[in-house]
Length: 293
Image (tube, rainbow, N blue to C red; front, side, top):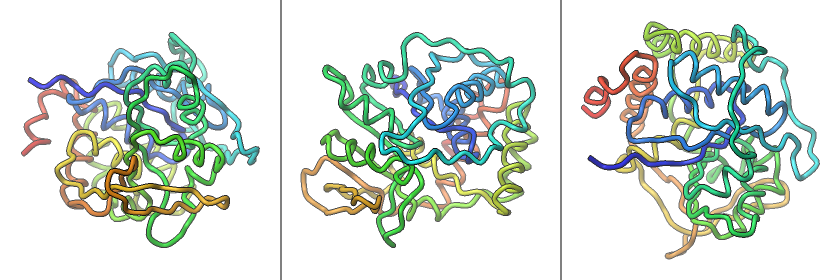
């Protein structure tokens, strides 16, 4: 049996529900092993409590959960809608264990998965002696010239990460928007158990706040790159970030960066939903065959 892929996760969980969906996908994927979860941007302690609560509701032992940098290095004001964690009961009493600070956790990892603004990750790749050999992330946009949220929140940090030359694979907004989780998908997740009900409450709250009737699983797609790489088409090259936050990609053989240019949308959605449902059951390993079939 192949050993699980071990990584540190860096997340701004709590604002868009897709971070919680990504964490659930990780818990429902036996191919993955979390060494640490680090939080970034805004109230990082509240975000850490959300992570810990998800593990507690799922009945899982949490790894080190480390609050990271709250302010963007660019000085941009933090966007904080105020609904974060509002549906989660007992969140203010939720504790968590931290073995090291967030930058230490990330810089000690070989693989970092980044699904939030890149403030922590920039500090980690700049730390002397860091052991980061690969970053997988959701961020940027490579088709229409839009400035994507994770880049916009800290443009200076994003520019530092892409300029560092670390091997990096990115799924951008141009690709993530091709998948939608509908009401029927949310209902299936809600029926799967306590974590499913927690996720559904956060989904419904996010839809109410955003005026949406479906959800884009931006961040889960970054995690899916680790467990189902065969469904993605990748192009290699170099990514740069303009001062205004626009991301640009130049295809260059041997470049340190890779972007997703296409993928099997139906299969991606199926696996995302099934893996989240697996996380919500008492025995997630029992659904591995269903995920793979």
